[in-house]
Image (cartoon, rainbow, N blue to C red; front, side, top):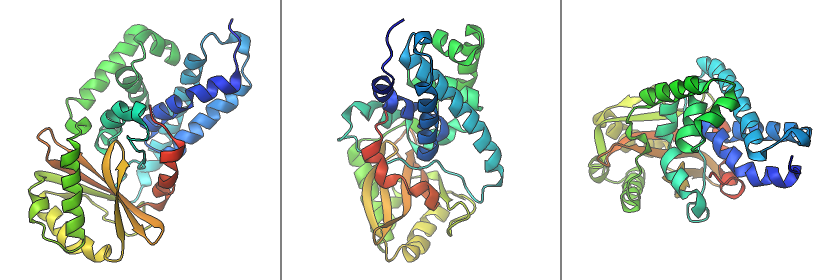
Length: 299
């Protein structure tokens, strides 16, 4: 058995564990709680029984996340309005090693697609497809057979399908969108922005019943354009809009003085048109945004 340096080995794996936990739970707060629970078990573990620190930590963290996701899905039944993932702010320039994963598996649209999966399917799919963990190791992690593990991944792939939610357009396309969006909110013409939206675009707003927000999604380019050009500018007239890296691509942070009051992210279809606009206003989901770029490296 190799000697286990509890603190050093855990710190080495911390960002990896946060990466797994956030993708499973879609919440920075819950991900940090899951990793902290993993650490508490880690410091009291028998070192002589641990062959691989990373495997042990991955097992404990993933199992904890599955339990937490089951509990959150039950409580979400009474959620007021649209539920959206908690935004995560991280700079690709500051975290170059995380760029591939940030740009492919952290988009709001993709996290919403993952909501179609059961907690176990979601965990297995992410471990295999995003983190490239072997079927054998996943089988041991969940105490299931190799064939059962493969079936879970296969079933998850069917549910996820060939969805375009992981598509990231070129940076120039993202910047053009954000510029057009900000122009409309500041009272400008909707014409340019409307050319960037798909005909079947969907707009979701998450207030969690704690702040005013749309209770139902808006579907279609006409109602979405009407809301963006006629309603939202009045709501955000005194707010400041900042471009930030959110969930793997450029998004917008909305501030009132120094307080963050909204986070806006976008989803794209395969042709590069905007297929989803996601506005998070629930204050519980915004409180971690100033911290995530400094505290969390998703890799």
